[in-house]
Length: 215
View (cartoon, rainbow, N blue to C red):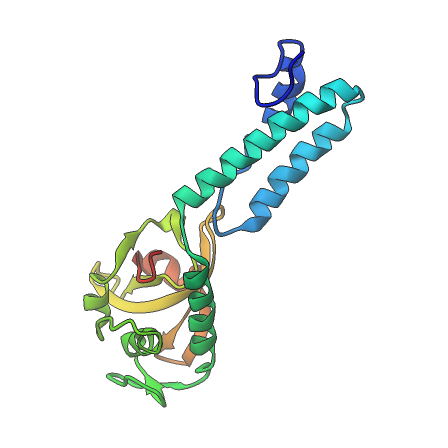
């Protein structure tokens, strides 16, 4: 038998099928290293049940190829350079440094903000000159699907009237795209700069998202 990158021999279909069944439900998410860790753990749990040294050698090759493929797909699906990733981390630190500052209509910082004044101020500190109104910001950057949100994205909501027009904007702090939930920092009219989640009041007001830092 020749081992390596060749397809597994026909004597292993049941073992390979078990591995696929264990990991097929695990989605690929470029932002969430826990997903890939869980994927590897599922592979190695199956490998631990294999007794034959020959079987293990073949299956290890299969596992390596499968993990490499999934990681490549993750990078292609949601690419982000190390430099941009570090910038987003710094951007969110800057945003959090204003926690508790008061809301004031038309204010652009640094002592008070309205919602679009806050998002434009934070991005301006990193060389991104985005629009200063939430409606205009909805045309900045690139459109992002609700299922592909990541930290740093701008999220938009209707106003209190629930009409489809843009009335509010925030910056994503974290996103769990498997569950469809995210946290965002914004200038709340009642409590100033704070972090909220996309449930309750904001659940039915969500309109869409834009990505400013794209690579």
